Length: 335
Image (cartoon, rainbow, N blue to C red; front, top):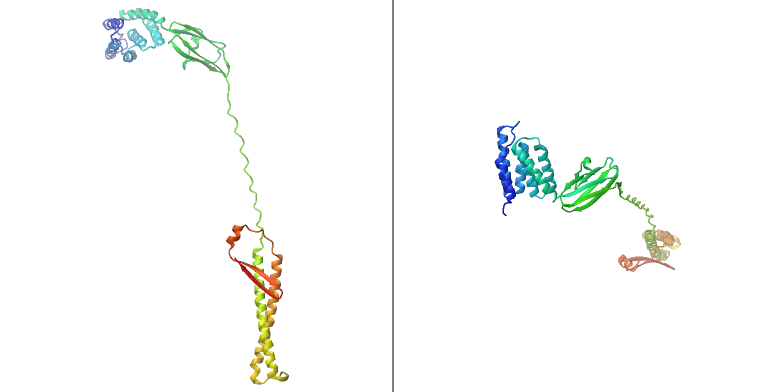
C-alpha cells in the first residue's frame, strides 16, 4: 500500500515543527511525549491507523498538546471513526486557539481545514423529543447529553438506534443515514408495555387415599375345620362300630361260659375285656356324634366364595371335599 502524500507531508511537517509544552512537566515526560508523537506520525505514514491512535493517546496522557490531538483525529479518520474524528478536531481548535506556539497555531489551522473536508463525509442527526421530562436518551447505547437534544450532531454513516426511557415511558427508532445526509428523528414517549408472567395454575389436589375394604372371609378355614370334624366323627363312628361288634361277640361267649352272670376265675379276664370294649364303643359313638354334628354345622354355615378362575383352580392342587351320606361319613380328595 503506497503512503498517502497528504498524510506524509502533514507528518513530516509535524515532526519538524512539533514543540510540546513542558510546563508542569518534567524533561523526561516531555521527551517521552515527543517520541510517542513521532512514532504516531510514522504509523500514519504506514497507514497503521490503530497503532497511530494508540501512540497519540499515550502522548496526550503524558503531556496534552494540540499536535498530539491532531494526529489522533487523523488516525480516527483512517479507522473510519468519522464522528469521533470530528469531535477530536473540535478539541484541537478549542485547546490550541489560545496558544501562541507556532506548532499549536499550525495544528489549529490544519484541524479547521480537515474538519471542513470531513463534514461532507459525515452523516448528521438531530434528536427531538416531545416533553423529555426526566427521560434518558441513548444513541447506539451511549447516553446523549440533554443539552444536545434538538441540535444537529455529526454521526458515522450507517444504521443507528435511538432509544428513550424514563418515568414508565419509552420510545425507540432505528434509522439508516448516508454520508452527507441530515436526519431529524422525532420521538414521542408512550407508556411502556409491562408484560406480566401468567400466574401458574394451582396445583392439583392430591387424590385422597381410599381405605381398603377389610378382607371378607371366604369360609375356607371354617370349611377345613368342618371337614376335619367330620373325619374325626367318622373315625369315632368306625371305632365305636368295631368295638361294639367285638363286645357283642364277647357277650355271646360269656353267656355260655358264665351262666346267670356268674363267671369263674378263668373268665375274669374275658369279662374285663368285654367291659372295656363296651366302654370304647360308647366313647367312639359319642365322638362320632359330636364330630359329625360339629362338622355339619360348620360346613352349613361357612360363607360361600366365588368360583375361582380355571388357572387358580389348577394351582390349588389337591383338594378335600367332605362326603356325608346315610350311614356313612367320609371325605373325598380331588386334584
